[in-house]
Image (cartoon, rainbow, N blue to C red; front, side, top):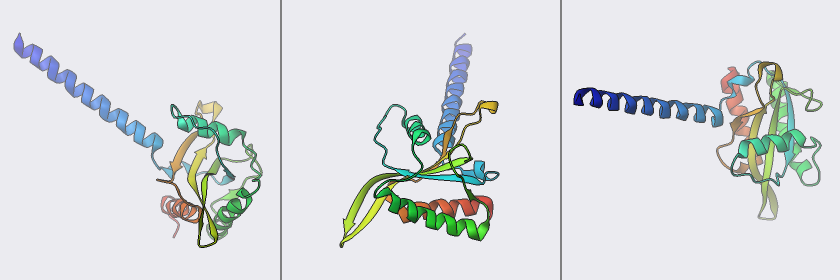
Length: 176
């Protein structure tokens, strides 16, 4: 009887450990930086603004909702940030021909969103810092909601953030 009880306890602990491991894989894949979903997608919309919503309970959903409601035309200082990002993306697009600019959200297959966190002034020059996200639009036919497939590891200078993204895009797509 004790042997059976010990086997049941051991079995349940193994199942519990496997379930926790599987949850960890799902979590890391969800928040993980996997651009492989973009291999067959070309039309991209660039969006730059300062997010005013802070939702700790479900941060990704709040970010996605902000981006889907946002005006893709940058305002004020954000135009300069947008231009820096667009310049690097255009250079990448011209060289590899693997992305094209979307006219609007309806035309885009995914969105590159730079959330301006702060502007740092160093030696009389202003440097924008923020978070970079890649959001794949949802597919109602396949019951897939919009989701973040890539994010910068930390708050970065705008040039470094887009450089990291382009480097990873090249690696995923096998571009030299």
